[in-house]
Image (cartoon, rainbow, N blue to C red; front, side):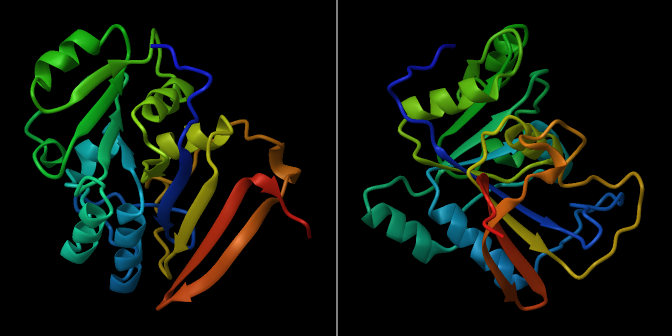
Length: 233
């Protein structure tokens, strides 16, 4: 899959909630709810403002989310603005091992799944009639994903994880904004998943990202960073 240079890539917003010690979940079978109701409502608004929402295959398998705009009022506002009721739902799977019975495929609007040349035929068979399946080449190319989404008219992409997906976007310099919601919880489990993994990030450990906003939402603190811009401090 080749992108066209004259088609702009989407604005990429990474959205994540973590514990104070940097975890996005614990190791229990059920999902750890880090945000409060007010922050979940904020996230719903961010979804409604987006043209597409992306989560990785691992998150789909672990959480089995529907990944919807929950507010009927916000969905109606999208329709009134000439947009689809729901943002495009996007996932990435190098292996193509995605269960067609998962909720992700059966709720909301259109879906697209990105995979590799080796897995594309298998995934198309599995998701026939459920999603558009696109190969990015011999390996997953996040740049190619953005190029293809740009060709689909996606101007704003919300990325909701998991950790490998967030790490890839940030380490490859593809993220324009981070919404980091910090919950007053300590997970403390070594095996619990984290927001980011080890990687070579642009500028290394001495480069300070620009902080665009900091505010409290109940007992949660929201930090909004612009990783492509440097701090003036």
